[in-house]
Length: 185
Image (cartoon, rainbow, N blue to C red; front, side, top):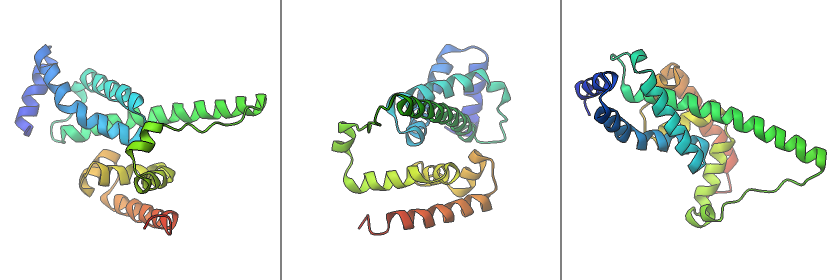
């Protein structure tokens, strides 16, 4: 969709046109879901995050400034929704660890057999390394390589300068090289 098509669609959504809302959701849901999945690494949580993102976007269409890319605006909302879910997840994990320690219940590794079948060993190792990156570097890498966004778009989504994006990419590459050295051939 070009900018004028998007603008018309957004105006129709704001006017309460149900078909326009459906069209907007159907157009952007796959990209928002892919982004959420690449950040959250959980299909059901990514599905919920995508729904939350689209609901927030629809509820706040009046805050969208048409001089910017609607996709970037949507990605910013998705990123914030995912960050909130990651914070909640970390808090839940800390609580679970405290309870496990308190009751001396051993930690159990959550493995998904279907993931092991689908992903080959190299992909798994690379994704583990990416997940181990600090959040700022991890998000930059995911936006660049998984979503194929150019540096300028990443800067807009993350609300940082292009120079900062380049710095984060260099740092991530260095860390990944150290983590993966000898593990991936």
